Image (cartoon, rainbow, N blue to C red; front, side):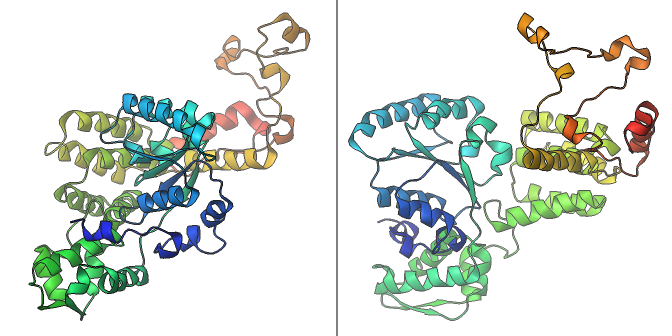
Length: 424
């Protein structure tokens, strides 16, 4: 017999619960699906919120061939085989075949590279699902060809609607007399995950003989699961809450708080590489130029973790956590790149000044490419003032130093070099 979660998997968008911002009336994905034409996209969200279900509904609605790969069990060979089958089947369908890749963040660079050509040429429409931020886990060329849609944990109302549907519509559950007296523990354990809620309900029902009354109360749920309601859940919403608390403790220069949340993750069996990646990001984003050694240590920690894993991995993770939490903080580089990106989006592709261009051909040299460029190493102190921004952006500061000892030195150096040309 199929599990309850599989029996209740919706077949149409009208039966789909949650994600109204994507598939509700007039929402972006709903409009795309109703139009009969979809482009490649990635669904990013926690487990059990309907990523796989949504992909299957789309394929059914569009009546197009649907292929599934799991990044856990598939390699480049399997990807190429599926693409070849999709090419052959494309002759018999008006729509591009859909290739759904679950946990696409686990695909290596070479595996992701193997998808590029098929996506670019329209051989397949790619739908990826991931619980990790695609900005960090999906290669840029592939990400640039996909829209990213964020799915949210199911709300209390969504979960209660799902519970009601399970009790009143599932063929097997209708054989029992089910009384829902309390839902707090059920909702807490589910953590916004539809699959977990249905698995818990099924577990409770299976412990009762047919014909007997099935009661759902907080005590019964807790006793059946035989675990602390506050236990860490590395696959659910708490996974995201705890890593958020961990990073915010580091950012807030509280080593005690940071170590506590680290311990919660260690005790819960969190993937050590996941923690190490977040430390690398925090070192660049939150400590930055105030202590450049933080990024070096975080990167070394990541390398060490990949070699030793648990349980010894807790030690370099703790060392790096304390170092980052106690380091001076600066997000000037983070703000600088975001400011520069904002300017690029507003101003578009401004021309590169001629003197900064290379002149590998005679024609380019005749057109003035590279003319009057000053090679900094030919000047005292390896510096000479010249223009490095497009004409339209002269005077703009992308990087603004912050108040810390390290950046104070950098600021003074820039003022000494640039004088009135840059208003630091």
